[in-house]
Image 1 (cartoon, one colour):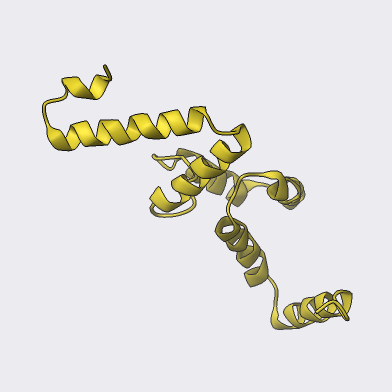
Image 2 (spheres, rainbow, N blue to C red):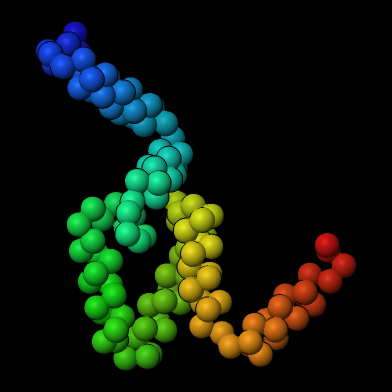
Length: 127
């Protein structure tokens, strides 16, 4: 017998059954797949910014406060370390695009054009 049979409200009983099914599926998934599924779900469930499982916004708020007061060398060091880790993380393409756009917006028009030329030159003949 499962725990949801003790719930009188049919809607809550259905929610409990779905939650139990999700737990079963995650428990029987490869850890990498389970992490990717959870990260993707959290991205769709978030509101007001890239919370990634921080329902009260404390991590994001703390990060913004720290970034606003960090000296440039620390800000660059932590940002670069995070960007190096990004491809190995379980973050979705959408989240990685958001990070890229934040960097892109920091470039002026001249730097954007130079970057595009460099990328096109590096990929010349592969298109």
